[in-house]
Image (spheres, rainbow, N blue to C red):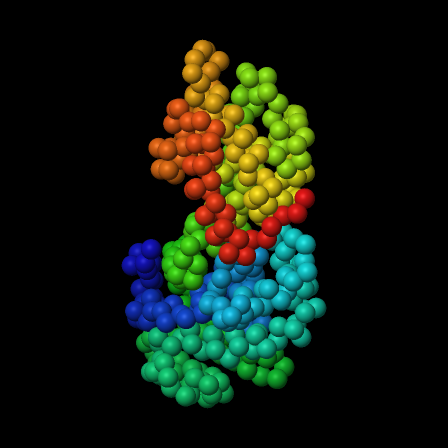
Length: 393
């Protein structure tokens, strides 16, 4: 995604420096620029804002990153000796500390906590105040990265206002205003506001792409970053074929489905649990799925089960299903089960090791368990290292 397909009205085209706009998100060591620009775009589009306070933008920045940190456990910047260096990440960890389900929060609940705990986060909010609003415009200004004047905010505010007033061409996207009554805020240049409104989908997609590339560098071992920059919805899950497979397996074999976490027999509607949470693995591969009760699935949420306590039972249940799908003798009932298994391939069996090594005929239980453990345990350990907690039943 780039900005080559952006629509620029001839009425204001000669006032916009698109080359500098394309470079706005470069040199983004902490990722703040993505979230600052994204917040501005959202406030322009959703609330028709032309003047926006720093505080409004910063709250939206934090909220935009909220789920990436609380639900998906992504790092927004480097860590040093277990301490977070990224101001947004530090703020989110401070605000979410002690909350039972921060990933289920609404923006209104977030705002309330932001106000209540502001004293604890004010130093990190100040970091964002002092750097991001000015640095985002660096590609438009004749200032080098190491110029000491970046730290002189009053001079920068005056310089930006003077820059826009003397330039009929190449206007800044916004200028910064500061007074005792309203505090610091930005005023969007009308020509740039119109460009954003005319091209919001392209601009948001461009920001998302840049953000994904940045977050993948900061979280090199984490799969599915593209699914973790916004709140996940259940429409993203593809579990219907797996649910039907387990249900029919129980019907034709007469074997009850056992909940591996409680040892209870599952009856009626069941949930499908991701042994390693979806929040980390970001897929619905059948080798990571197991039936469970809705209540336990809800309680487990995005936590990891205790490996030594549950893996053998997890593997045993999956091997019994495997035996039914790949039997020594076949009949019509088994053929229907095989058809249901094949229906899972598109959404639930894309890993080469699973399709070419695990789900092939002829495995003993020990062989099946060994292959499954060899491939699942590293994923489990990586999720634990990323910060996913162990679930205690």
